Image (cartoon, rainbow, N blue to C red; front, side, top):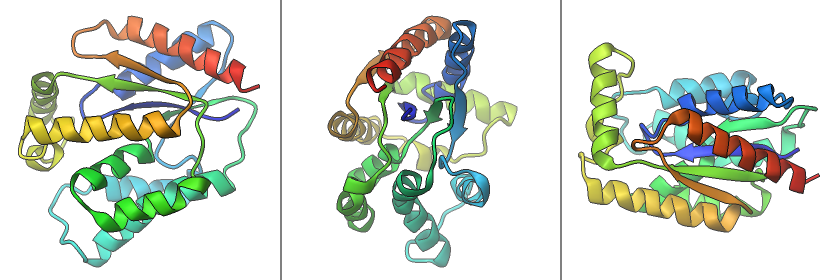
Length: 214
């Protein structure tokens, strides 16, 4: 079965909600596993994690910048060509669509054109959920996590300043790309909703997408 994606920009609650989705599916006899990073995992996954967790400024054109951007563009192609699905379906937390959308929003023509040129051989998803969250709620979650040490990510980089209009443009671009690349997209607002109820809806949608793809 093709993987199912749970997507949403920073501080939308996707990791927490996906764990609840996994539990809901398990309670109904479907064993799904969660993937953060490339589906291939292994060394590629560890490299992806290291690059994603860089919190300092990375100079455009530096070796680290070229490696990170090149890896992000290559990941959906490598996942499509080399990943071999097992008997249990994957819940993919975060996808290449968010990096593609950010590149388009920031007018990073190299990354955006790279994604566009290789889209025919990108990993395909059975379906996806896109979480929307009020900007102020996202900021509050980030700042709470920063105080408790749960994140070291920089607010200015994470939230474009913070700039709610630029962040909204990123979300709208993400929505547009997913609408053209994923056959079934469920859109939910995670600002104040009960995570357990969101997980129930996502689990039902994922199961229906996997059934439709059999």
